Image (tube, rainbow, N blue to C red; front, side):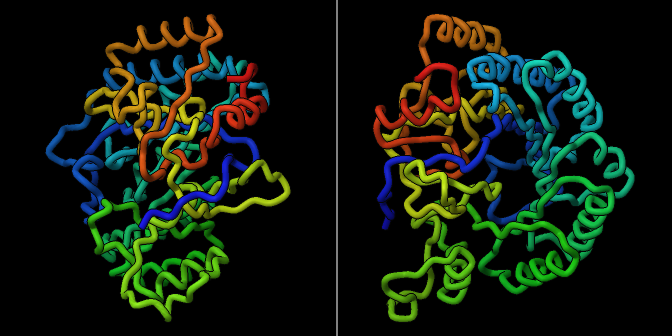
Length: 369
């Protein structure tokens, strides 16, 4: 059963960044059961350094075009380098250094922090080289890793804390390894490590990542949810929480119906089909292996109501030229959602009607859309 929304407007509580999301490689040093072949594939070689640097150039110029449409308070970005496992790429130090250098062309117009989503299963030598080049780390804790790998992750988390880096540990709550995940939560608490329990995104027909009654109750308690019919009175054994709602991946607090005095991290009913969405003003996603450019990592909606790329890196100049032409002609591109479920991108400002959407977007862009 898909829970339906009972509200008409959703947006971040605060100042959202433009999230540049770049899948720099499909290779990974882990092989988690919930990670699909689309997300990691060790049979495909790492992309060449030359091609990676070309992508960096495109992404920065593309974002610059959008930034010139933003109101000044919203001209900031996060450049998220991930994989696979991006820190597993043999040229990662050169790539990260290049990102920092190339952004200097645009730093007078918009700010940018370099980010990564990493499993942090990285040996000390390369970790020491990488840490100074990244501003914010999201360390994904995987309970399917070996004990030695889990110990290495904890060691690297403590180093980030010691170095004063900005980071959080995203603990992927595995229904079959629940006790391991709970121990990691307790370790984070004991060591003052910022952390965020995360549902595992999964295919709709894959029930092995559904949660049992006790686990679902734990999620409800964490989110302050009180069900109309208590779980213990229902004739069920496992629950698909993905069908009922979702939190933002990064724990961003969200405002419902323009309420600026109250925010929440969990949104019941993550179905926005037919809604107007500004995801293209806050996200861009590139799969380096295929060179495909999407408006967002998970929804992958285009401007025509289809799940499709807007082009490839080899077409990058044409894409940027067309975007500049649209803006110069006061054409403000937006997405009409055609998906049954929202994952990454749930924090992009969105509204049920065009009228509400236009009014809401005045705070983000220079002219109404």
